[in-house]
Length: 290
Image (tube, rainbow, N blue to C red; front, side, top):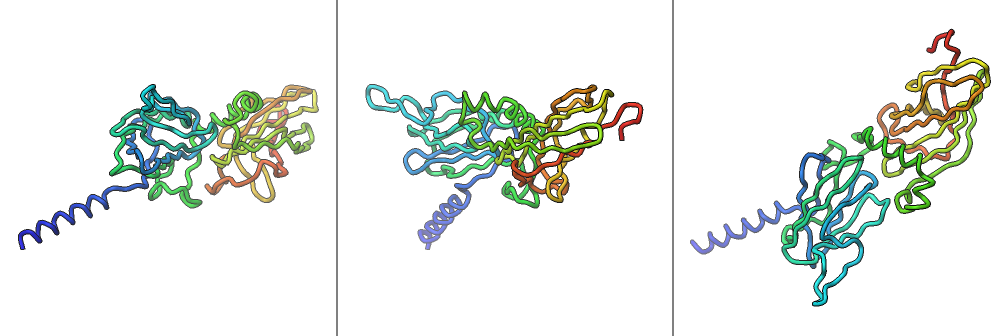
């Protein structure tokens, strides 16, 4: 009976350890902590996913997409990472037993530190980083969290330099959808033209480039924060604005608006190719801006 008890106790410990080991992990993003990532050596790869496009990767002793070998045939690095610029995920596996290393991931203008450790017994198959507070970090329609202002600023910068990025680093903007259809909104004193729009699917966000033409000899004023982008029966309000609020006499000025969600907090699923109308109330200074 003593031996039977020991066998049962041993089996219970094994089962408990197996239950404790999770191959699918979700982390909430926090740039003030270090994230442990247990990787495979021969039995698989670990895929790491972020809420949106990874902006940069800095790592030492890690091969990117291809492995170089030493004269004796051994790999020159400890890990192999598979990643394409513009993606929101990458895969990684160890090239040596008991290998360890560190990877710095730049996302949303923040740096996140991943501590890699080869351990086939408790390796992670999928590691998902989430902005959400929901259970398991799930990004549902109901508890979806819009991108931070830092992320939106990054999208705005990317939209402004899109043509250069497409020429020099096409992979960095591969998932961005661009629309050059001009949508014109006519008003009594001025004309507003939607010149270009960019949709960043990974962030459910749109960046709009707008031209404001003052047709009068008076300076017109408007409140950028009260701007709305109208499509179908929906009005969307910008979460980030780059606009002066002033239209000099007989001038054409440019403004940028970034929309990341609907007024009731749902994901922004609208396409850049819609017939957008820009709603701005601009009037001469002596009349007062409402």
